[in-house]
Length: 304
Image 1 (cartoon, rainbow, N blue to C red):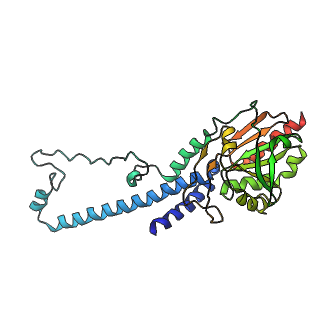
Image 2: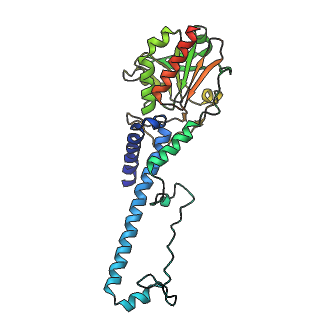
Image 3: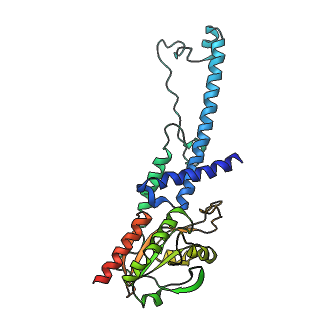
């Protein structure tokens, strides 16, 4: 039970860590938080191990203090002053603490291991390069049809049909009801009229089920009945746009405390022209910056 409680505490600590640093905003997604939670848990396990080691050292010191000096020297090959018998003043070499090969080994976090913030920064660098394989400007946007939801009501979304009305912003995100994705949906919904004024429509795509998206699309805090979101349960659409898709995280829960029962894709936005070609790809930035950049791009298209 203690291990489970630490896991939950780790997720909350990781969310506060990432959420409080604008440079790490692209990481406010569950796959990263799950890893951060694991690192946080291992940090506690290492702290426990270090405490046990200190207790053992102190117990040994107390035992040595209780022994006559001759017995202490006999008990330790380096003697009480750190000298090897028969070697004069030569001091004992320091005992090296080896770093385990696996980052999931409990000894991963010793006093020379990376801190959680360092780990998050490393993950930020990894996330910034995650969209390298994504389709780029000038590529043809793969057409797709998918079950979607708008204002809590399901419908069938067709990219081809929507492009006949104007440019489409297709934005992929990891999961409904996770911190960064909540922010992004809120930003898109509050700027819905600005996108419409530029002649563009917006469709969010994730691996969430249509049932989860029905709730998300109607939630007044996020999509607020102004933003359509589509279900790519198999990840096929995301892969066709060159995005990575990862498996679900066992035991992961969303911001409502409900289990997330699906996989994830990376946060990347594509602005698609009416002719079906990609005008721009936006990735590796915060959810707010992602939306702002998408709006800027469609406004540029409208002014041409």
